[in-house]
Image 1 (cartoon, rainbow, N blue to C red):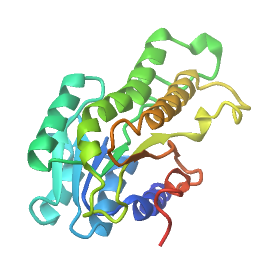
Image 2 (image 1 turned 90 degrees about the vertical axis):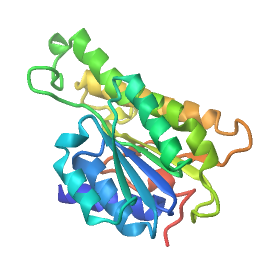
Image 3 (image 1 turned 180 degrees about the vertical axis):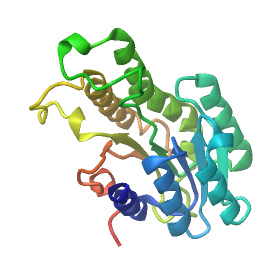
Image 4 (image 1 turned 135 degrees about the vertical axis):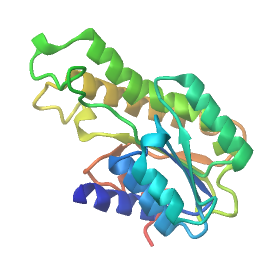
Length: 235
């Protein structure tokens, strides 16, 4: 957990710039730490945190109570249910009207009796492959899809960056060139797909005249500032 805190702090320092930030998958782990760091670093910046069941997200609710009204909004969002993504986007539109930073943090590697990292081909199951792909690759691109109108408005003068930023949580094991060990088929493939989705979003970012820069997918624990080094210099 200490490594996650350090990584989230480093990324948030580079990416935060005031305005409105959305952390998707924020009830625990690095998503929760992103929320903490953004609240600490964004002077007057507002944060929207989403998770599947806000009522049981005790740490998020505690953070909301610790800060001034309006600094932190907690909304329900399940990346496997597109209607909840659409509803969250509608709520953010009504409350804030724009987004300046989107961090897709939710991901799945293992759930007892549901999905486990595969060490041999004999352990690969279609259900695991599909679930990992739905959560790790499909979910983030659907979130970007529904937040796109808000991101196109974001990045205005109230932020230090001057453009909106999208960051996805990838993993070093998603690298094809760095895959020397094999295994973890569902997780590796889904995170590789996420990286390609991110590149595809980057390919259409000039649609219209909005100011949006998708960051490269950020590899947890591996050069954490690489994702935003060009857009958000240190300092």
